Image (cartoon, rainbow, N blue to C red; front, side, top):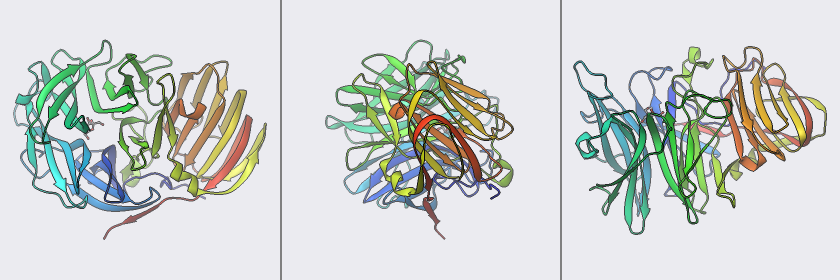
Length: 442
Ligand code: FRU
């Protein structure tokens, strides 16, 4: 069937542009996924709002529309990214109100207001009045006007907030604030590391046991062969070890956010896209662009490395399946999932679209033909590879190696939903997948 590129497994807008996941939480029996939404234009221009999806099971979703508009002087140029914190029977949403002042400004050292704004809601959709909690004058003097994307959590009976920032001398950093009541915030400390770019966006902070993790999306790190292959990076600092590890080696991943599910799992969504990419997405001409990643679960390995796997709920979407044995050629249909054990060397080829090859300590994803829309090749170093899980939707592919130690998230645009798959060195199963349900209000 001709591919219309409409995703079956991923949250995406019907029209306009989506970027970062925002306000992720489980509140009053439902998962809430807010996102950066520019409803007017598929290139991200026009009003920047928060759109809202909700679901009881992460399989049946409802799109309830736009819940936050840039409609006050404190957020007139964008309801930018932020987070959610559930407290009693209220959901607190914190975001950045972006304000561009008139005049001759570069909007980095002058001319931009970056306000931390709070709204509360009883139902996830109807919002209270907006209240400004922090303004540029509340940030350290060495910061430029790029300070944004609050993430708030509770710790030892107090609250903490982390904000991403760019200093006046072009260093990426985060600012930590603390509060007793979620409204009055005091500056606590700043954190930066050498050589991680000029701006850190969308920070997130969480723990596994004693280990603390700070997720950041840094801009301005020079490209290397195995790291920092995209225009902007996204990864986590393991605070005790002091290491930075990228979340994803694919072409399309940025600005993830995590939250805790009621059963204690740390769930995680990213934006399956990046700003300022040198490649493109074929849906733009049809009026929409971008989607979120699959919901994932994070795990900490004994050595502190984080593993990422698709949320277990997604296994309920599995339908007809058949065995894959070494050296197999098969016809299948998007969306599908491949789960297998891997030999010392292996390959998966989606005919005419891409090849994924593991050989001699290197995994490589390479596009062929035009289905990559300018995407070329991405490389990961991996001493050995034991298993693979690949989930292909109608216009994306997410590949998880070694239980999620390495992940490639990538958009792709095969002309047809009937595809040919050629595998070598893999023994496992291929499942057809049912789509998720996304109803739209109104
Ligand atoms: C990251 C980002 C955030 C900002 C938002 C605006 O993609 O640039 O820093 O809040 O997008 O849409």
